[in-house]
Amino acid sequence: MLKIIRIGAWAAVAVLAFLSVALAIGWWRVDGPFVAHEQAPVLAPRPGIGGPFSLTDHRGARATEKTFAGRPMMIFFGFTHCPDVCPTALFAMSQRLTALGAEGVRLQAAFVTVDPERDTVEQLALYLGSFDPRIVGLTGTRAEVDAAVAAFRVIARRVPLPEGGYTMDHSASIYLMDSAGRFVGTIDHHESEESALAKMRRLAGL
Image (cartoon, rainbow, N blue to C red; front, side):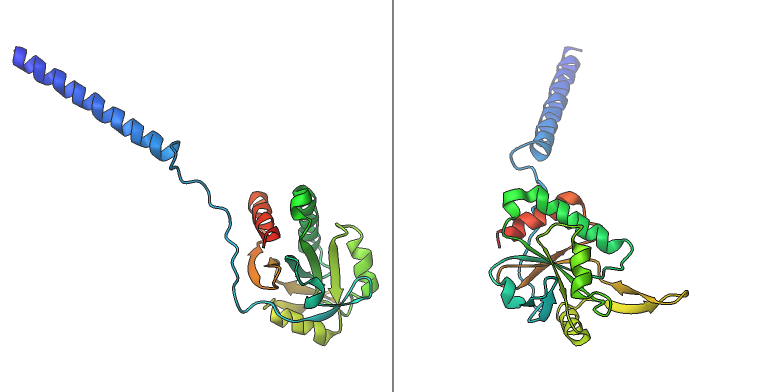
């Protein structure tokens, strides 16, 4: 009987030791020094998107890729008659630039129209008055805009409306370019605020 009691006691000790080790491992994996934290977004050059362009800004000045040389850029393609996606994206961009403060002072933002027939210099200037003044509007002839759209592999097409007139289908992502003019990633239209701000902070240092 005494032998059975001793075996039971040692078994209990072994179980307690196992549970202690399991709990320690659990802490090490969940709260310990080697816990896996969410990785910061990686922004690295990716060939094939971007390149030379020649457009006119919303103040009437000529603008090319050289105009913005040395500054990381956020570029959004849209149009001023866009009912929801474009104003939402530009408002979010404005809010994020404000939230970054001094961290985002190097960032240059641009809004390139895919509807140059309606988005004249004057129309762009009026439209952008509702957003952060650091956002530069860019337009041009149809050929100039088409060249920029092709360089950035943007999807943009005119869609007739049943009641007359037309709207535009277009890519809704924000293109991120480093200070050397190289494409390094995008901010998706449905991306979380935390992720978007983290990408902008990383971009500001490139």
